[in-house]
Image (tube, rainbow, N blue to C red; front, side, top):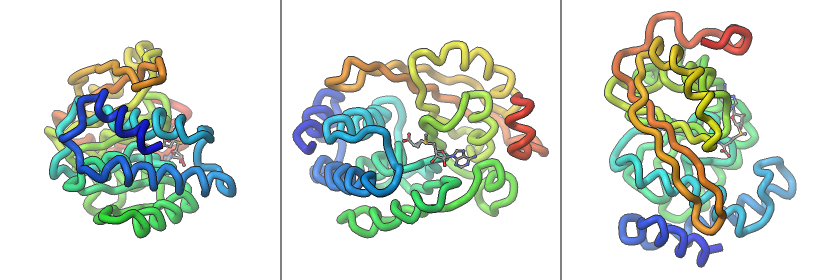
Amino acid sequence: MEQIISAGLEELGLTGRVPKDAPAQLTQYGQMLLKKNQVMNLTAIRDPEGVARLHMLDCAALLNFCDFEGKTLIDVGTGAGFPGMVLKILVPSLKITLLDSLSKRLDWLTEVCEDLDGVDSITTFHGRAEEFALEKEGFRDSFDLVTARAVADLRVLCELCLPFVKAGGSFLAMKSTGSGQELEEAAHAIKLLGGRVQAVHDYPIPGTGVTHRLIIIQKTAPTLKGYPRRWAKIQKDPL
Ligand code: SAM
């Protein structure tokens, strides 16, 4: 796994821009993931090469489109830590918060953080994004960056994620290249929630033939009162 990750980082042009021990740390994390996946549902990808490419390198590619150095970031619906954990390993100065509504996954992530050498200052929270953005002190309009991968349709995702972003910060939505219609349908939600589409980047994941998409939405104004709404309302009546 380590060799694939090292070669992939090289192909992404990231060697020399990330810590020397990052490939070893990502490998240790990937091995812990595969081991725990035998007893807990963490990922559908069950082979080391798939984990290296479709998890680690997919998330690492974000470094080519955004400056993460010293920023505060919340990863919404982090699951087994993607992309949050990978970004933290690659950019140690990142101040990262991992949020998920499933406590078992967060308990495991807390263990991973304790076991990974040199990976610290990660905060994990169990809860629902729409509730945290509304009620949790220090979360609303507060983060430089918000990330989400494979959590929800973009219209719904914008309501879950944009409220966390401070004005001037960005929401990074990891999507497939088939997300064009989703993006069109999210135009109203993005505008209403104080955002604007800043960039759309398609990037190949080394050694896979797969291309993924990063949609960067910049927050230009604070979140309107009353958003995000309750989960039942968000689902029933997406913006
Ligand atoms: N981001 C990870 C990845 O790419 O591998 C996990 C993706 S998993 C398919 C979706 C995750 O989002 C689940 O762990 C789920 O518990 C979490 N989730 C879904 N809705 C959420 C919400 N409203 N607030 C917080 N977490 C949520």
